[in-house]
Length: 140
Image 1: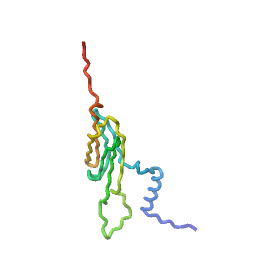
Image 2: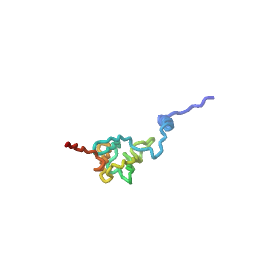
Image 3: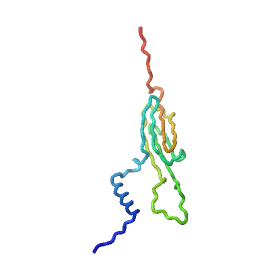
């Protein structure tokens, strides 16, 4: 005897989630924005995508030689009306965090952060003594 299995679109999504989660099982310490890190003559710049986040949602702090970027959204984008039932929710809830060990040559008192159009840029200015400088060679 064969059994009839009912499949719904949401059931298919749940199955896909289970399938991909086996390969991308991330611990909370690994969850955070993807970033690019660049170095200029005077600074390091960390750039990460945080779409939908505002400056109030993001916390950047330096503790010792550790830079931590945290982003939290605690409220839903759209409030559920009394006559609606959510079947699936993925947007704009929760938090993420990412930490970086700072090189000794960073001036921890001159860290700047700016979020614009969903892109966070953290500028870590190098300390004055670590910046390269040109030395004039004298001739006799």
